Image 1 (cartoon, rainbow, N blue to C red):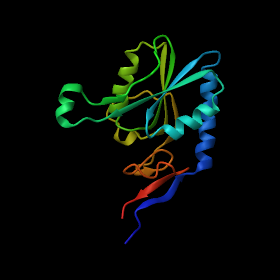
Image 2 (image 1 turned 30 degrees about the vertical axis):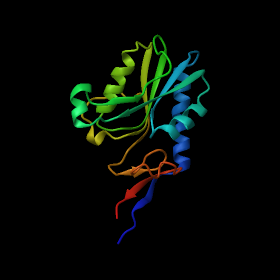
Image 3 (image 1 turned 90 degrees about the vertical axis):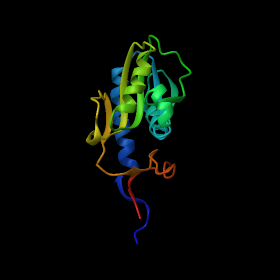
Image 4 (image 1 turned 120 degrees about the horizontal axis):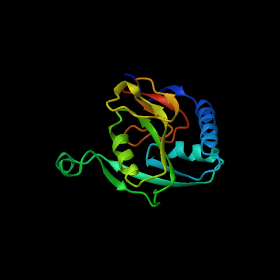
Length: 177
């Protein structure tokens, strides 16, 4: 019987930190002389946004959104997602960077992006730790991407399996027993 849990490391802690510093350098160049509001989607992106923003040298504010997929009955009235925690800052006229852990189908990101665009920011760009184009249903413009995700179930560095393994400093394949 095989063990359940983290298995082979896909992206090491050092690889993650190096790639984040490279992406941050590009963001610093793109937003030079401007202020930025970084919007992170909880919970999976918490480690990524913390490490990314520590590498940014431009003036910034950090805000958080939290979403969930509602029950089938509620979804009929509210659409595809519910905002459990909305933003604290007004985005109107601001430069906004939306930070995600994984972009997969694009459905949730599309709805989050619509929500943010309704606030009329001066600009809105998307940054992701992992791009998973294999299951993409909607075309999504990704402005900054650290890694293309292999077609595996991954845990660590914010990614979880039933809320466990987020705290691993690397990203590993999840083994099912």
